[in-house]
Image 1 (cartoon, rainbow, N blue to C red):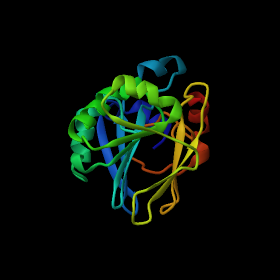
Image 2 (spheres, one colour):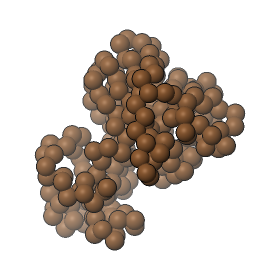
Image 3 (cartoon, rainbow, N blue to C red):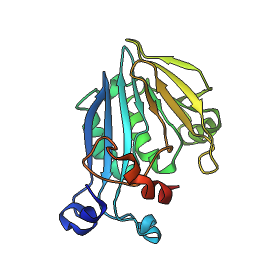
Image 4 (cartoon, helix red, strand yellow):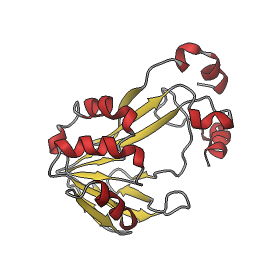
Length: 209
């Protein structure tokens, strides 16, 4: 889908927010929370391609959920997750960074998953404990391993940046997928699961960063 097509087609810009789901590897799914209309914070950059917040579900003997979206998607996101795993069967919630906009979604998850452990960087622990004093919150270190079973061994890398000093990336040894948080990101909403033309997104990456 080209930029011009997306900008000039009201039927696309006016599509309601939704959550697109796809299996991207063995026992691994992406949940793409999509906003099609131009975003208010993007107007000054003339960005009119919407945005997509990616979350991931990995199922081994244990189940991990990575990066739930912000509160504008809470209800439809949880409804979609339930199609793949009962919320009370979630074991780990991995946060690549702590965003205040996610608090509502996190609270909704914690209300239904009392045994879940939240994994985040060491620098994010206090922020989350202030928001959820009764939750089990674990600060993870670089190269620490979380074994979900069935070959899904997750390792972590601290990747602090000026905007997200608590950033971490997650790597799944079984699928060889790196969950890269804000790295390689753009503001873009489309039906494509994969970036089929990487160079075509150069302008979007420049505006994003």
